[in-house]
Length: 211
Image 1 (cartoon, one colour):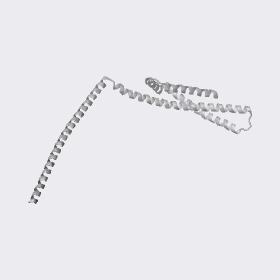
Image 2: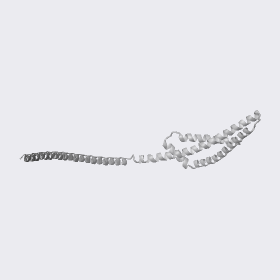
Image 3: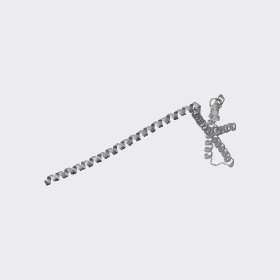
Image 4: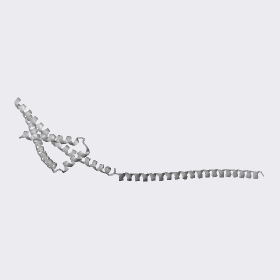
């Protein structure tokens, strides 16, 4: 009976490995989306998942039983002092089977958790890929091409307006530069006249003193 139970656990482990390989196998997004949709909505898949959950409950019980048996075998081995060769061989066999059952049930539960997480992650990625592909399909029609042409025309008109504005600013800068040059020349002329008047006044004052 115990051998039949662990044979079922081993079969469940093999099924989990096959499903995991199927999930991570590279395939088109359309096929993977169909597979994820079927596993999420099909009544057959839901019944299979319900049975797998019940099986995981039994696997957990077998895991706890295997751990307890392993501890008992280890305690019996530690407490026994004088044993013959037959008893030692029997203890090693019991320890081997207890370790095998512990690893088998533990790996089965661990891989089951990985499968659940992988299925959820792939479902989210497939849904995200589908939702991002839908706008691209919608925007690839002739109407969208016309809208893109209109958008480009508007951007071109804005660019022309900016270019005209820059040219106008350049003309204003040139005008300001000319005005600054003329103001500088006028300032220099007035400065020269002021200097000449100052010299004339100085000479007139000196002539008065001499007189």
